Length: 82
Image (cartoon, rainbow, N blue to C red):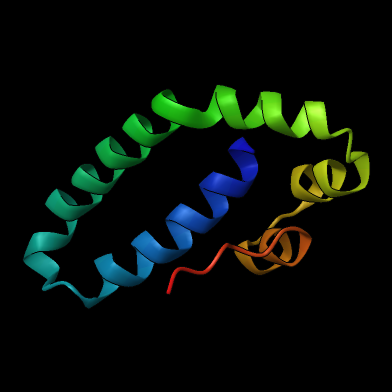
């Protein structure tokens, strides 16, 4: 789950950061790092426990082995909200 969250979060964050004016990018990157750290601290252990309980080793190994956001999202697509 950590790899999944990291790859997806930073793919989205990097897009946002790249769109910001150059003089604001460092501050925005620091803000995103703080946001990422808080999210990981709040929920990653619960998600890991749920994955282990599901006993879906194929999906878990896929998420661990993924090197890009697209690869990790192919393992377990994000839930959509309507």
